[in-house]
Length: 550
Ligand code: C2O
Ligand code: CU
Image (cartoon, rainbow, N blue to C red):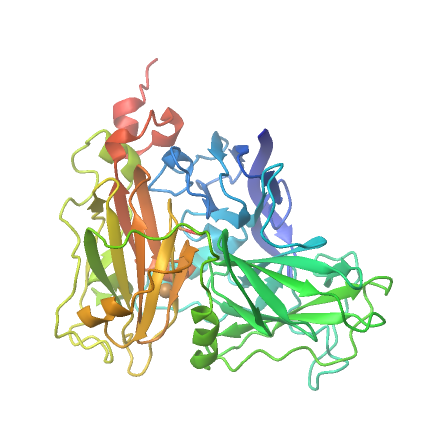
């Protein structure tokens, strides 16, 4: 293995991700941030300098479990204090498992300002992937809003509530086209884009050789949108999900929710005289955003040679049968660790939209998450009193709660409480979806767990009942770090609390998390080694450990 060093400076940049100039948060003057490539077993060292003049920053390494390094998880209020302007924090952690990952800001809504990039971990030297490919293409998907994140945040926490709406543009590797289409010559009622190939919103092209196998690494760091990706004329075989191998299965299109990653294999076996569209569209919410397009460029055609066919059409946004059939096909590849056959604890987490003094919130068992000023990791380890609410958050919700209807009593409470998990215990979580505040609305929520992979034991419609336990898949459940709950449905997961630390488990939709849609797990914190002082410079840990007069 080797140590891979990076020097990064986070700062504002003028950028035109979709041809319109805005201020974004970039790294080393670029958007998206640099791609990290490493091999399994390597140590990543990122010296991160915060050059945002008036706000803190942290970076989370999404999908990396941080075994033994919980202070490097990059979550404000959990693993560390936000890095202050002009200060440097060193992230040092091991990437122990090959896979497709990414990184992003995890303070306020900074991810939505463009603070993200790819993190690819290849197999260690001498190891082999369980499938063959000749080349690799990397697609980091995101959505983009013209309104800045500060306006978005103020709107979300205002009375009356101001929703951020749908994104203006979908981006592939940080590039998209607003208000025009690359496919205007074949799609009616679209205006053509006038862009030069050197511009920041130039079409993304992927050069491939005919008659080869390619691995597409696909990850989504969208703020809101659930996505679907298809390639004209090409089938895809899904082989990896969230850094875990899956039983290969062939599809025409893949759904990708925020926080998820996939690898798919394609054969470049089509007519080589043509290029082909890669199209990414919106699912699960009525789309107001045009699909993003990229070009699969067969050598030796010119990269910019536009395909003459119509881009693949995204399945209808509310065709949940289609989404479910894709999601249910994801099963672990043989040889994947199996879950323990039973669990020590089962919690049911009801997802509801609620009201708190007129503010609109998301709640879990009627508790909306508020993050404390002192990071949990330090306050739990050093047993600091009054750092967060010590009332245990509820593990279930009333038996008579009707998940098919808006909440009868929409009033919610707020808390920074923690689910304390016994170290090495096996925990089952039932994520229960429900009707939101207005009738006949139940949304998709992709839930992401920090510090662990979990097994997805099953999905179901309506309210989860004890009987559903019998339907759990204990034979080949996929290991993942993000899983979706479908409208009015439930999803069951199991994990082993074997990673000492304090971990977030939350909806990966940025405005939902901001509105309280998450919980905190902590386990074995007394076993955590020495937390770097620089991670504890704020709140009560700051008072205790930072001597102002050295
Ligand atoms: Cu990618 Cu807590 O998030
Ligand atoms: Cu959500």
